[in-house]
Length: 324
Length: 268
Ligand SMILES: Nc1ncnc2c1ncn2[C@@H]1O[C@H](COP(=O)(O)OP(=O)(O)O)[C@@H](O)[C@H]1O
Ligand SMILES: [Mg+2]
Image 1: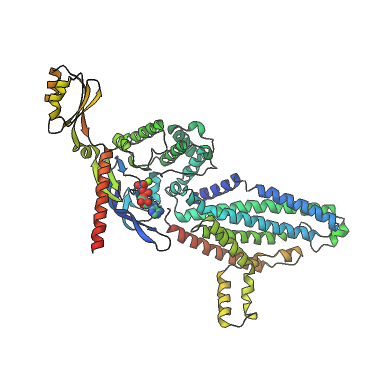
Image 2: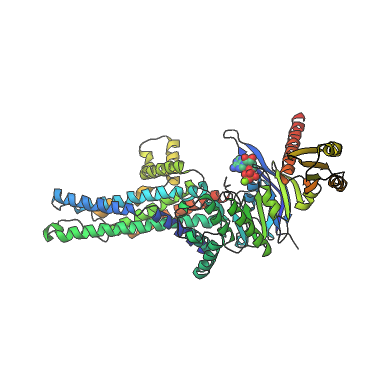
């Protein structure tokens, strides 16, 4: 099956500087393929190039080099947009329109007849939870409500592929949960979702695969489980009623022992040393098990390390160029 | 086609919500009060002044709408980023420009139509109030249908100014667009003088430059037939046709330019 989204060596230089403008590479040879039905997380810290990528895919800006295909059609194919949904970062609409009027306007652009429009608009406004405010002008909407309008307009045409730029931003915890559920619903309907985020928990909860960008470059891509799996660093063993002498005895085999409260300790067991023996030994000495959890890098740690590496890489390259 | 229409209707809707129609009320008040005052001062002798004032006010009020909405048509959408979700819909950039233009022309058409009706009502009332002897002394009847020719040309001029404003707003912000549009409007009023520049100077290059400028810059004085119409002088159909053709070519060039620039533009 051909990929739904194929990004090929996509590169974007912005011109910066007023008098002597020089190029600034915001995205550097990004290549990715996303298959049908995937929920794909496009991750990276602020300024990594996520929005730039999405704007390139939506033809709001034009690539310096490289290209992409969506649903087998090259960028700029206006008809392909009939099957695509897009939520911009911090969306902004016409504040003189009501939510209903805005969606109606966009519905017209998709060529829907009035009855069809009315049906879709009403259903969507309810689905994103602003059905009660449908007749309110958008100037009276909060940031979170605007974000919901943005999501509604991205789904208006029942798109096969949905691009969401930071869909959770501006939402309260309840809103985030709603968006999460919505994305899962879309996944269950077999839609392809490509969303960007700098919040890793979102990706952990939703994505089949992720790509991490840092400084405009692809730093990693793959299944979330694969990326995280090789990073289990050890075990966190929490036990209660450990006697001080027992603690002293096991101290050499643990990496760190932190007292949580009197007699209750969190013991960090290194990966090379399976925790079963230690657990048995402590239980035999009258301690009780509270919890045992694997310690692994969160996506956050992964992020920080990759960003540091990418930064170092770019600096090394720059230094090499300077030497030449 | 439905895309262009939808964009146009939205422009019209925005102008209504932005209270543009209030200017019509202002227009009517100005017209009625001034004709009343003139009636007091000149004892109804001068219906010409009311005609002249009505036509000038139509042109000026229309100019304000054309410039102040026109300069924001595109740049406002880019600035507030409402263009992002819009262009992700099945709307091409040329369709977007065409829709924006059509929307403002529609707004202007409605405004000019209402102002025209107001002018005719006032003129009708004036001539109904005057004795036949006074009416006979007028160059032309009060509610003279020939006024429509002047209004048609004013409307064409407004369409041209709208195209100028739209053109500038595809690549510059509202302030610069306003300055450039108004600048070009003023230059356009005096452009015809450049045609006869050779009578004033005799440097060959200066004449050549003036000729070039005359052909590139819009000649807006061509759209002003107020004086003829007010004095009951004829405006030939040939003139109307030629001026319409001139406007059409100029507008087409501006819109093509706007599309060419806008289609290549990055939205930051
Ligand atoms: N219009 C622009 N002109 C110049 N630089 C830009 C522009 N837009 C973004 N950038 C720069 O490009 C980089 C990537 O930005 P962006 O794609 O917005 O990042 P992200 O969405 O991942 O936070 C940043 O360093 C940003 O400062
Ligand atoms: Mg961003």
